[in-house]
Amino acid sequence: MPKNLTYTQLQDMNNKDFISVLSERTGYDQKDTQKLVNNIITAMSDAFITDNSIIVPNFGVFETKKKMERIIVNPSTGQRMLVPPKLVLNFKPNQTWKDKLKGGR
Image 1 (cartoon, rainbow, N blue to C red):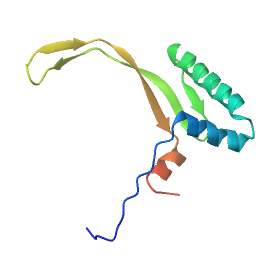
Image 2 (cartoon, rainbow, N blue to C red; image 1 turned 120 degrees about the vertical axis):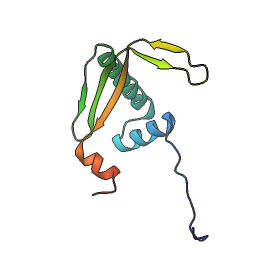
Image 3 (cartoon, rainbow, N blue to C red; image 1 turned 45 degrees about the vertical axis):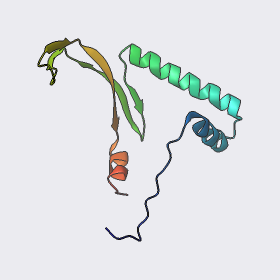
């Protein structure tokens, strides 16, 4: 590997940063933007609890999927255990986002 290449790590955006950026883009103050984000998250949570999907145009689909119960084996002890069924959250990006993530246009 050449020595002249440098690696720069991107930082994750925390809640405060997200609210700040969203507030700047929408023109609303940060307090109103925080309320809006909280209401969106609450509405999404309610939809997931009732097993509904959320379709965001030009972005993707958030949906819950039910995983069936299964038997797993503890590799260190060899003991078999039953894992109960559970709901998991799944996100499927639309084709535009898939292309962007692959380095496409």
